[in-house]
Structures are given as structure tokens and as C-alpha cells.
Amino acid sequence: MKITEVEERINAAPDDVWAVLADVGSYPDWDSGVEKVEGRLEQGEKLKVFSEIDPGRGYPVKVTELAPGRGMTWRGGMPLGLFTGVRTYRLASEGNGATRFTMREEFSGLLLPLIGRSLPDFQPSFDQFARGLKARVENAR
Image (cartoon, rainbow, N blue to C red; front, top):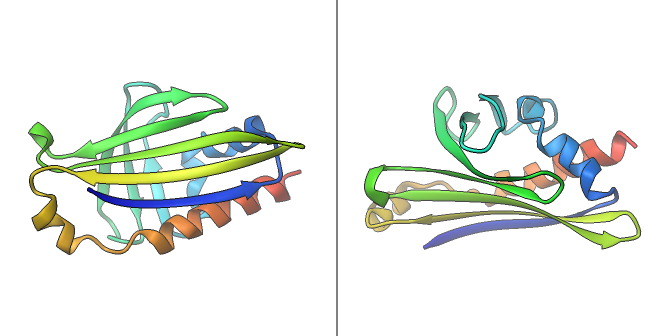
């Protein structure tokens, strides 16, 4: 398994963070690493995410969990679980009107040893996403 994770303390309530996080079509407005996101954020729906890591190529994911104000999970990869990526977004109240945001991606599957060698380092883009989310939410207050 290959894991990338980021945490960020955001000075806003979870519902305020969720309002920005759930507006996937606006990600490019505050995260330069995201070119665009196509689709609707609904349980069971598919999204296509375009990022600067591989410009012009969309990565299809399925929304497998949607818990407004608490988090969501996206899943993508190859058939039969040969290679799978699961990205989770979590929001947890820290009290005093603050939220702990966590984003985690786990790659797994039989082809991970082969495909994993060609995967870029996602940590810089995760860090950028978390900083952008924090700035967007806190500057909107």
C-alpha cells in the first residue's frame, strides 16, 4: 500500500469548510493544482478530476461516501481491484470554531508494485490543496 496524507487546522466550523470542499467545480479557483472537476458530487456519482500532475488527462472516480459536514470518499482505479486509489476527506470539529481537515489517498492492488514506481510524489499537491482550502475558507469569513 502507498499512502499520502495531509492535515490542516482551519479556523472555521466544519459546515463552513464543507461548503467550500463540496463545491468541487470551484476547486480551480483556490487550488492551482486542479485544472477542473467534471460531474456532480452525489453518492454513487462519477467525477472526472483533471490536475496539473498530468495536464489534460481526467481521472475518473466514483463518490463512494458522502457525509455532509463530516467528509467524503472517492474511489478510482482498474477493474478487479488490480490497482485502486481511495481518497478520503475528513472534517472533525476541534472546538472553538475550528476544524481539523484530513485528506488521505491509499493506493493498493496487485499492480501497485509496477504502477507505484511511475506515480509522482503527491505530497506537494496534497499540501497545496490543504493550504488552498484553509485560505479559501478563512478568507471568506
